[in-house]
Length: 260
Image (cartoon, rainbow, N blue to C red; front, top):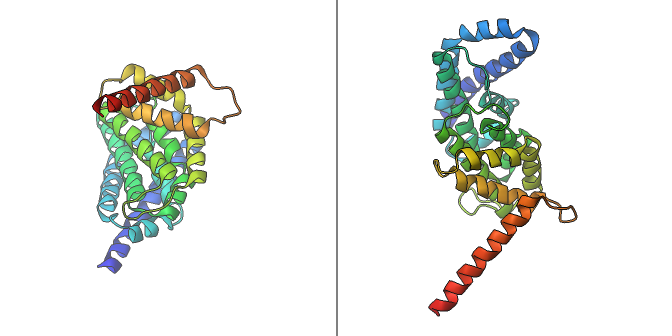
C-alpha cells in the first residue's frame, strides 16, 4: 500500500512542479496582457492542478509521506508559489474562483505537511518561507485583500499553530522539542512581509469575524515575545499589550484568591 502511495505521489508532484515553474516563468517573460490572456485560457489546467493537490492532501497522513513530499526537490517551493498564485489578478469570476481554490488547496497541503511532519519537515517549511506566504495571503493593508473572511481566519490559524509548535514544541505525534532557531527565522519572515501592519488591519476590519481577532492577537503576541530584541526600544503597541496582559493576570489571581 505504501509503495502504491509513493507512486501516486510521484505522479502528482511532477505536473504540480511544472505548473508552478511555468507560472513563474510566464510572469517574468511576458507582458501583463499576454500573461492574462494565457491564464484565461488555462481553466482546465487550473482545475487539474487543484484536483491533484486535493488528492495529495488526502494522502498526507503520516510523517513518512511528509518526508517523501518535502525531500522531493522544488515541491515545497512550488506549493508556496501556488499559495499566492495570481493573487491581485482579476480576469473573470470563473477564473477568480478557480485561482482561489488553487491557493486554498495549496495552503491546506502545506498545513497538512506541518501537521504530520517531524522536526526535519518543519525545517523544510521554514526554508520554503511558509509563514511569509501566509502573511501575503491574509494581506489587506498591503492592497491584496481578496481572500474571503474564512480563508483569512484559517491562514491566521495556520500561522499561529506553526509558530506555537516551533516555540513550545509539539507533544502529539509526531512530537518534537521546541525549535527556537526555526521560530525566530519564521517570525523574521512574517515581519519582513509587514506582519504587524497586516495584523493591525485584521483587528480593525475583521475583528469580530471568524475569531480573526483572537488569532491575530496570538500571532502578534509571538512576535512581541520572541522577535523583538529586549535591547531595542519597543513600539507603543508593545507596552500597551504588556499592560493589558499584566492586568488580566492580576484579575485572574484575585479571582483565584477569592475562591480559596
